[in-house]
Length: 341
Image (cartoon, rainbow, N blue to C red; front, side, top):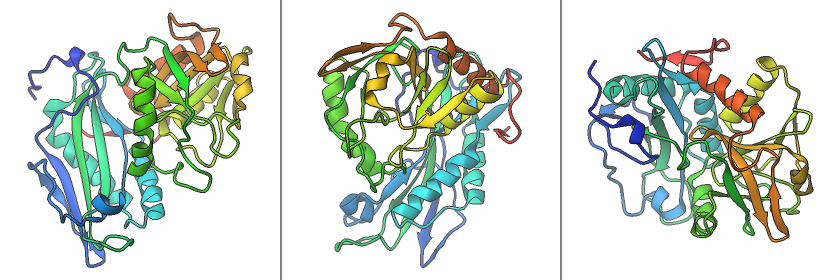
């Protein structure tokens, strides 16, 4: 199959419309079969639930070209489950795992010419999302919904590839206790836009958010979980009911334990502990794992021992193994890789 004529290695993390997307509709208590369409536009009522009350949630995953030329996706069943959890919290009808995986297979296969070739550093980003398209005016769930899944070829999430990032300790809160921080709701990301703008306007790659209740524990950034490495090479990841459960983080934890033989702790991480860690990484679908070199705070700069020049050795090894699994260079645990074509 002939690939699109694109300079794959120069791609940024930006939207590029492709040939097909999957669309299904929920009406009168059930989802229709759904199918592929060419039209990239959405048409809905001006009083649609998503427009009036932000009733929407989404997912993010990737398709890869492996070393032997196959097109695969990585643990998509977990994305289906997380989308279901998000839908439940927002009173949106669930999309079954069966429909989710069928949509994934169909949309990636139909856009196979857009999947970046192996070795280019680019991937095909897959965006499934749900939204209330039926009209509401009082505060209530929408009567009708749409499930869509589109794909777009992308380059690295952070400019500069895997160069260590400098973060800003945010004075804003990302998610409230008993709120929606644990799901992938669009409204969470809307709330992070202004703090993100403030950080980027000051030259930072991202914010580091603390818990809203006590402002003493590290949570996450606007779009990625944290992973820390202690001086004796233990992996520590923050634990909180308001942190989004990252599939990439869970996979890195497994790699650390079962491939690298490292001890892993998932626990609350006190802000004052940051100075004691030698490495810090941001992990998520888009970023995989990106190194953090320093965090600027009102009390001064916290610099990790790994520095601002290159990724620390433990984070580098984690990234090497996980991307190796995704690209078919390292044997994957059973069930992690779904072959599309």
